[in-house]
Structure formats: structure tokens, C-alpha cells
Length: 143
Image (cartoon, rainbow, N blue to C red; front, top):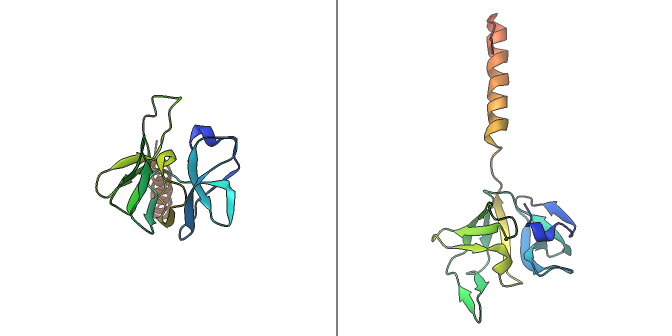
């Protein structure tokens, strides 16, 4: 997902194995991820996407940068009940959660894994497979 304030920025979904860089975007104060080869296109992560940074992550504080002390993170969204806030966040393996927009620009990360399909999609696939198996045996399933 890309935060609400990046809706006016061109975007695309992340792919496994690609390198991303924390970046500012024109016409917005929000930071996000971009490809080093195309810095004006926001790369959107789905909740559950795992990324590994090349070095310990730094976040922008009120006056100073703060060192997160970790490199491995999972993308998630927070504060969804507050529409006018940033939602895109990273949860690090040490338990620290920071907003993506607070990342210091220029930090590089590799997409390790995208999330599995949603529960609805898996349930639909399972039902279809079960229905085919039952049909092969001549059984009829009633909803």
C-alpha cells in the first residue's frame, strides 16, 4: 500500500528481490520507497511484506536522527481508524515500529518476501478444490 498522501504520485507494487530506497517525492512531504532506477515512482508494499535493509535503519526524530538498531522489518499499517494520519509503518524484529515517512532518505532495502494471499482468496481456492474432489467422487456439496 502507499500512504494516503502519496495518492498523487505515480506508484507500482513491490516485487520480490528488488532493491528499494527510502525517498522523498515531489509535491508531498511524505517519504516512501522508490526504485533506485526510477526515483519518482513510489513502490508500494502490501501488509506483511518483509524487507531487509543494507545497514541498521535510521529514523528522523524531532531534532536528531535515531538509530533503530535493526535491519529486518515487516511492513504493516497502523492507526487505520484515523483517516488523516500516516498509516504505512515498519515493524522491526526487535519490536520497534516506525512510520515509513520517518525513514531517513537514502536507505536501501531488499524485498525478501511478499505476503501470502488473503484468507478470502485461500478459502475460495480450498472450497473450489474440495468441490472438484467431491465432484470426482460423485458427491454433491450443498451450500
